Image 1 (cartoon, rainbow, N blue to C red):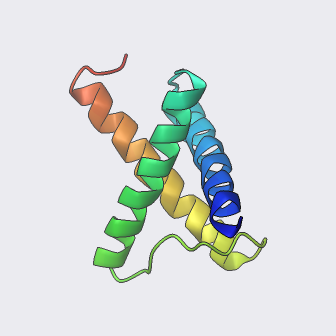
Image 2: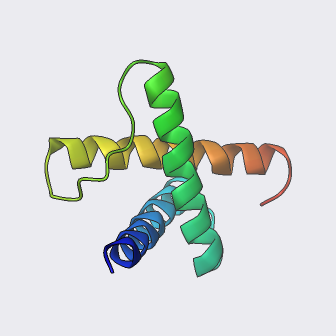
Length: 92
């Protein structure tokens, strides 16, 4: 049961991040693509943040400074994904 809840939380987190990144980058895609961009953006953002020594995206979803930093890192990663997709003409 715990892993199912974790998956649902990551899907909601992915949707939130995808929606924010889509608004910033002015991109509209369907819900599935929005969730995928959000989750992949969190992974990419977390990877880049770890490379730069900032830590990654945490799984503590309580509203705290760590959560806010995780959201900013994930949104940055999602925006990067959308920017690259635009450069490669995958999206308009």
